[in-house]
Length: 233
Image (cartoon, rainbow, N blue to C red; front, side):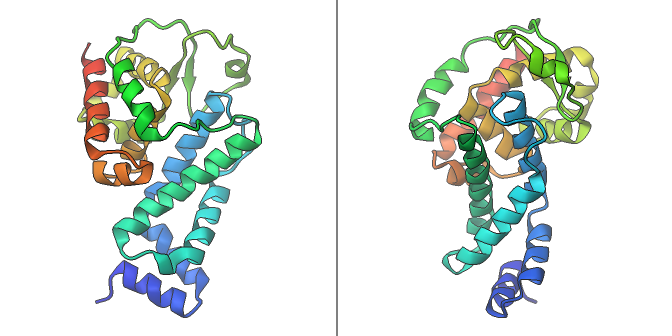
């Protein structure tokens, strides 16, 4: 019985791009959810224009790049992390095109400061609108950008957050908890939020997140533990 990776190698050898892409979709179904989530967050942060970029375009570009460099990939774990890296790079390219240049500081240096910031307590009674991430309206884009925001998510995203943080899905049925979580998420430092997104929406392990972001596994675990502490306050 051939593994998924072996089947992909065969499709590449046969130059069968259609079956190659179809198998990639089955191999990593959570990639699309992750990409959709990250684009939405960038829109909320006003780093991307609303409804301008489609997740499907990012996925198609990832598949194209993976097909081109597949001979450099040696196993399924490397394939999984490489696909998320490419997705992040493509989304960042979109951001760069809209004059939001990336931080030049490596993730592992940013995390040193962000881990300190995560020790600070975020207020639960934030002054901002409740914004459904899948049901945005124009008022969100007219809000005073100095107002603290609360981001609420669809149930699929909430289930993923619950699994990554050791929470119960029942927690998110409480509107006060949803507001507290949405406030905490909206005010997380960028790199910490990126780690949480990869773990939850991307379904990656801490080891895989570390590989995607080129940070230590221990830092990934530290970020998640501090987010859990924030939610307990």
